[in-house]
Length: 139
Length: 469
Image (cartoon, rainbow over all chains, first blue to last red; front, top):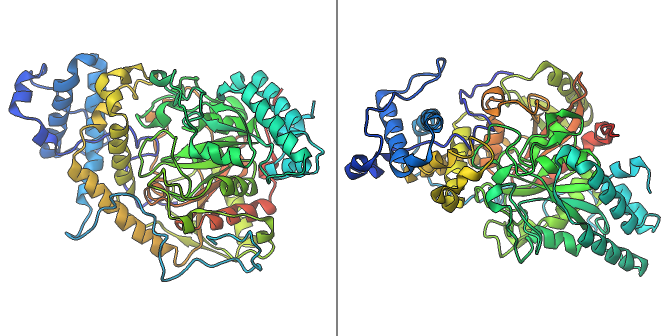
């Protein structure tokens, strides 16, 4: 069973893979100046076997981590801070895969999920059984 | 006191006995309550039992049936509801300490529907805190503690409908209601050896259910057979003006009758070649045997590959952003630190940081995925694969490091809102259940039910149950 998907996300990872975005925009200089952690941050942790993030990706991770620490830093232990940095790094990989997916300018976002079940071109087949009052409406 | 086997009878079997007045709903409810009180804690299956209201409902059902007013196959049938469904006056904890004392003054629509058909709620099923939306590292991420698998109590039931899985497998209720945003019905059904239906998104109202990721949350039954799932689904499906996500009236309702099985539509099955990177050998064996059944009894079975794309990444981002929005006050107030799981205490802060641009990119990817899957269902009625590549895992396992595998079908199935069903298809050499998964086109819930029903009419795995003393 070959898997052509190179995604490293698992079902259980979905929620933790809180990724970060080009959050630099929300990180203003004044945020930074007020941040507790202005000291040179440690580099983003990367698992040994994971592809390296680009310098831009690393910077993005760092910006987000600093944004969190600036806003909530006093809530975290050192171990939690380290975990947050790890999560941010892992999330960055998912973001980069997503951003790399080719997309037309006119591609529409599914702002609210509407399953493609209103299709008219080929109505769903109905069972061959004679339809009693209880026949399914959707089959 | 009924014998042990009655606790494992299907809804259909129980209904026959209740309708013919050979089985009293009050006696059945009392028997399930006694069993649940005795065994529930062993599996951490229940968040709470509600014996008084259960017996009240059972007495009302019995009275009606005696008077000749039989409401249908769920009348007098005891069930458990995942503890994220609001039940008026009963604590609804969402499995999480910050909500331990939460009580709603209204019922979730699903509960109202089940009341209407005369089902009897025995209690609230335990669950992973906040349905796992904040992430979790350990099976113990629940106000009720780790849910233990009735097939092997050193193993987990999977989450987040962890109690629902344990309750059905241990014969503590005839069925349970679970929810799935990503994997939370299919995985516990597979691990616990029960039949679980994840309906098409919008087919079942989420009004009164905890919101995790509103564009992906779904509610569905976990029961003893595909047929039972169909009967329960028929009771809870339908448009609801209180849930904007529900599909229109003419596409929401679902009706099921066993007579539909007499002339089933021939189903074309696509066997997925790339749903899992690999299957654990003990899972591969029963799955191979299951494919032989499919080839023998289904119209056609052909290999097919899922389209390749960043479906899981898109799903992960949608869940993370929507979850951060759903629990914004919990994160901002810092009360997220009261969650049990170390990952749950911090992941929300990370989730808050996603940009609108990336969220919209994920939504665009969803649209593309929907079209690709719709095209795939031009050829196949149902696609199939193992429900999980591994059997139930040890309770102590670190899920972040010990249970990591790509799940493109879970990703694409859930971001597209596709219906799915897991049915038991065998056991590992350690006697842990293995599940077979069917996924259908959005709106064609009947196809996955029919696939499960057909499979179960030629196998008896769904009739097996753990030995519990």
